[in-house]
Length: 505
Image 1 (cartoon, one colour):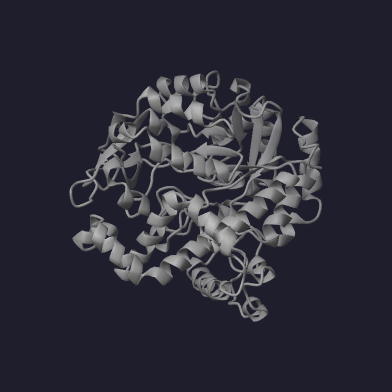
Image 2 (tube, rainbow, N blue to C red):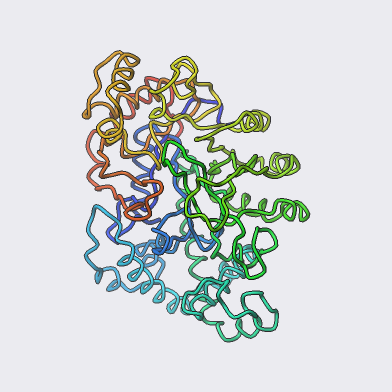
């Protein structure tokens, strides 16, 4: 069960935060946004996955070389300087990043240079105790991750299933020799993860002080070319050479007429169960420790998943297969009581998914942009059909902004339905706040508004376009947007509908 009191918050990716270093980070800009949340009476900050992104996969936070490692691009140079790990000159000598988009290649080059400097200067600092404690506490994923990353560099970034057989198949003697040869690189990669953990912990504590919960996000699948699959091949549907026999995705739906072929390897749930689902529980536990609420993306994949033959280029010819046994869900309830789990239940949802969510007491998602089409009596996204144990959104990171949705996607008939339902005339200028009001008045316990909708921005500010691999995950907020009367306006509507974070004010 999610929080019992009515409350609200903002969906704001970390990469979109204000920063003079080309991408949002865990420095002053994140604290400024936390202050904005507090000033506007909010109690939830929803983020996207904090995992390492890759330019080769479009910089998606849902595609990573590790399900556990944090993204070094989010490490704040300012905080490193304050900790004595950077020279002041390193903060002043920065490229022209621009202000409106993330230019990942430029940011990655700059951040790599400053992280190397921080690592070199760390030998002069007294990090031994806290660093060693971090390495010990995270060894269950950290050791495999840093070795994987170091070997990828050594083998010119080839995927692990194209490495020499001894390394592909994790021959113990070959890996031992590699650890000696790559010792300096392994230490550097561990230190970078330590820095990420330290800065995130500090930011998380700042949010807690303001009584703001962080709603994290965890993809259900992991990448084929990842430390997770390389180190745990027995848990995935792979052939002897490491290639997938079938891959993940979803059938045709609202977002794509060909469905979505994600390409992730599928799980061997029987093998995971033999080990007590330990890998999965470690993953959920790790994600839960860095946030207060956890949204699991594509939750329906635990009940049944769309299996696509690996040779298919689209998701059209896939088929449904059953997910794990009830033992997985029983363990989920028993082991994780310190944070709430939210199920992403959008798309094609069958009765067994609804039954599982009800049995586990998991909140789902209600998206207003899906409300004005079809059967008005039974459409679950219309406010009169909402139920309390849910989170209501105007839109998600995969949707257009509400203004863009109204201007570019909504038919005239749907616009008429929206106007009749809302009792007012919506247009591109006011529709974002019309839907914000509709979300706030909902009986759903929690209400989350994407930052772009709060600012009434058009489709140019969209976070992601599903099934399109380039140009996503780049929008950045202008710092001036957090100034002026916006916080006061949002505070007023939050107070009117009983969602105010009084403790954090």
